[in-house]
Amino acid sequence: MRKHARFFYVLFIIVILSFIFWGVGTVDKSGAPSVAEIGKEKITAEEFWRAYDQMRTTLRDTYKDQFNEEMEKKLNLKEVVLSNLIAERVLAVAASDIGVSVTDQELQDVITHEPGFMRDGVFNRDIYFRVLQLQRQTPEMFESSLRQELIAARMRQLIWSSAEVNPLDLRNISGDDKDVNEKVNAIVTSNRNAALASYVNGVRQRMNVKINTDLIS
Image 1 (cartoon, rainbow, N blue to C red):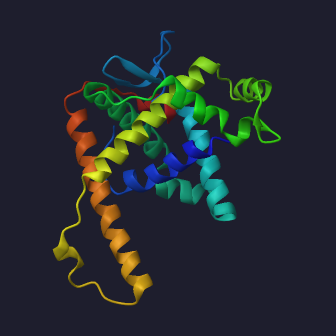
Image 2: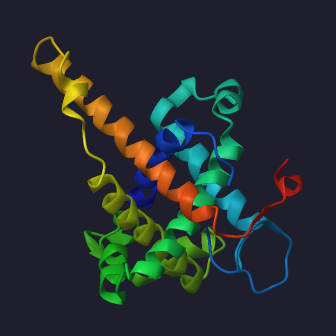
């Protein structure tokens, strides 16, 4: 389900585990206790646990029997999930400030091409509603959350594109083509992660972020 979202989450694990910073979902209008507040926005406990379950499912699909409680503890999974949600909201706020957005048509295209919502290769509205119902989400909740995911992904791409590789870092790279490519990719990934963490932390410092971990302990 939601393969694009899983990709974002797995990718963001790598980013977050490379940097230590604590501190998205939809705006909470019910007054329910929140796990975190980012400016005027809130991350509810329900939103957190939904993202947590998605992350665990992704890791289980990726690592099979190797994923267990010990690995989850080593990954600090709850902290990673909350950091991801906060970082995505920070990126969404930054995107709004610079005019980065996702149109209704772009959102619709992603939804109608999601294999989990298809039957015989064609988008099926009944399946769409049934899946969301099983996830305890309304279409409005899902589409708002998905839009934020896509905006955050777009922001990450913009930030990554600004991360340049220093030629000096490549000077002593040697080996066969495979080794060289792996080493270059590692340097590029490290630079991108550093640029992303620096950007998110810079924006976050200008925001009022409150965290209540008692709700997820």
